[in-house]
Length: 383
Ligand SMILES: Nc1ncnc2c1ncn2[C@@H]1O[C@H](COP(=O)(O)OP(=O)(O)OP(=O)(O)O)[C@@H](O)[C@H]1O
Ligand SMILES: CC(=O)N[C@H]1[C@@H]2OC[C@@H](O2)[C@@H](O)[C@@H]1O[C@H](C)C(=O)O
Image 1: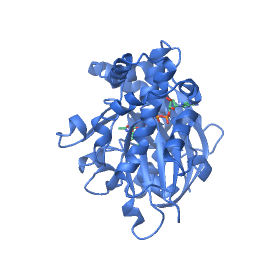
Image 2: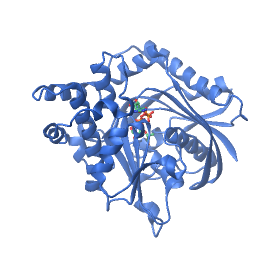
Image 3: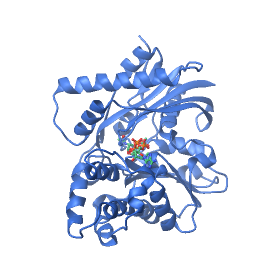
């Protein structure tokens, strides 16, 4: 058994998810037990600086260095806090904070290689915690021609495959991403697929901030949106977005589904004089339809079951809309099959660090487009 800490802050930039886990076994034959999970919110000024950089604000190298210092310290603090009262971990997998992601799709499609920058340097986390730390998980996949994302599909395959049921594991973070896992059988591993579906909560969160003058950062349980009515003409118009029609493998980020995108949505909505609740319902519908349409368009067949994870799985209105659009395919939360939906991504980076240390590949070429399986991440041993 190895006790590992997984640390993740995603595109919602709401805080650092920390998972303390025990991992048994090797490669795809692993078992993971969650010992503790906690989200540690960023200090408001750091969150704002990260969001500004993600939105394209130009900053100096000095400011970037300061931001990296701050993020690494927050990550190290999260690792220290999550262990309180527990036996200590011997390994940390730290995703870091993505501040830029150049995918190989859409308007960046001409680039030969992807590029993905996560700040919060591993050497500092390892030094501050005294624990071997693996970070920079996306670089190796990108070097062999992959998008560097999504990386969770191989972990999903290890933890959530089923002998007779095909499943879509749908993460709804700032950005949404899916892993399709066929039921066990011949070649089931080679039939797994994964891609970023598009906006998860990113546009909804930005809209709530805009509508409340930053008093609120998200629509709790989707209550506000549920009191409105989606405008289907707008949804149809927004579904023309090129990203939704690109064939997987594909990845995206706040570079596309960010502030500028929301401003365009606000502009489009002016013609319809929507109430704030109608506007939120319409954005929720876009999120739900873009997810379900991507299954219909890109999967060999629809799954037997959809399992949600990530903060968006708590948005009851979004969940209800997904269930409605999926008809008789049941939609539930990964908790129902034994994996904590709030900490699944943090758990995934603990597993990826474990695989790096034990010499197993972490990427799934069918999901990232990489030319081969590779070991993911840089190992930092405490100084
Ligand atoms: N009770 C709730 N009701 C509605 N939405 C919620 C609730 N709790 C969390 N969320 C949403 O979930 C978001 C955080 O989700 P999560 O932590 O999975 O995202 P992330 O890891 O930052 O993103 P990504 O998966 O893109 O990396 C919040 O910003 C909010 O929009
Ligand atoms: C560049 C980056 O940070 N991408 C995230 C983001 O958040 C969701 C989606 O976009 C996903 O592809 C990815 O994270 C998860 C953990 C992944 O790599 O599987």
